[in-house]
Amino acid sequence: MTAREVWRDWTRPPRPAAAPLDARERRLLRTELVVVFAVTLGLSGVRSLISLIDALAAPAALDQQQTTIDETLARNPWADLAAQLASSFGLVAWGALGLYLLVRAGAGPRTIGLDGTRPRRDALGAVGLATLIGIPGLGLYLAARALGLNTTVIPSQLSAHWWTLPVLVISAIANAWAEEVLVVGYLLYSLRRLGVSENRALAVSAVLRGSYHLYQGFGGGLGNLLMGLVFGRVWQRTGRLWPLVGAHAILDVVAFVGSSLLAGALPFLPG
Image 1 (cartoon, helix red, strand yellow):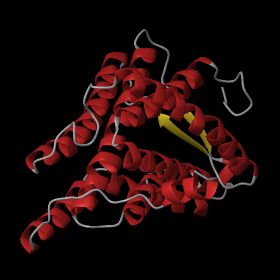
Image 2 (cartoon, rainbow, N blue to C red):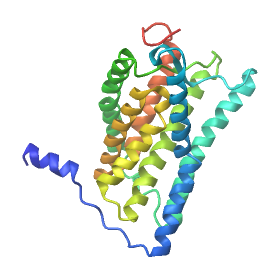
Image 3 (cartoon, rainbow, N blue to C red):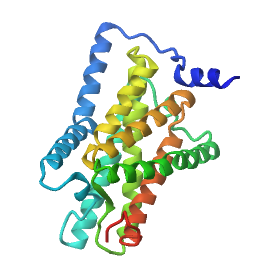
């Protein structure tokens, strides 16, 4: 197969057959999508856009402002621990909601690639995807900051406690689970049921992923949009979601734990 044929095969994937929906089922599924994302990541996208507009209106330039992802939520350490865990639980529940709705629709974990039939290949795929996204992603972030298009992102500013690192790992896994189940598995499968082409569905998923990262700046939005294009296409081609969840978790664990351990040691990680 030539490089041109490989590119065409990658950019124009066939749409798997899906059971046709009648007019009422289509209306209900469209409504379901609007409601689900209005209370989860779609709402996060709107809030993120508002945050970016506010940052652009501030006296300080965008690259002189800081954005923190994981920060202290309560003054008392035990209350903070509870708040952090509650936040992660909410993200897990978001992903569970998407999975539950798929089951109600006659699909399930196996349909979107969340079964345990290929643990070794899924793990290797996760490491490969994390490498593919992580290194260029860091370069894009640094370039965006240098061009004044991004805030300084501090993945974690949690106070040092015995539970800090475990909580950061839990937070990373919860974020990965919620985003990949909702934005890839649930959304792309639902759009497929509605008859939306694979490329258009991929664009919707990627734009949504980019939107709720705009609070970081234009670089954060663009970087995550590109990540969404890669992740979404991998799922469309392989039908496996575990590699995406794993890769996302690896990226977030490295970012959250690394920023906590190396704060001030690297020029792009303020102390």
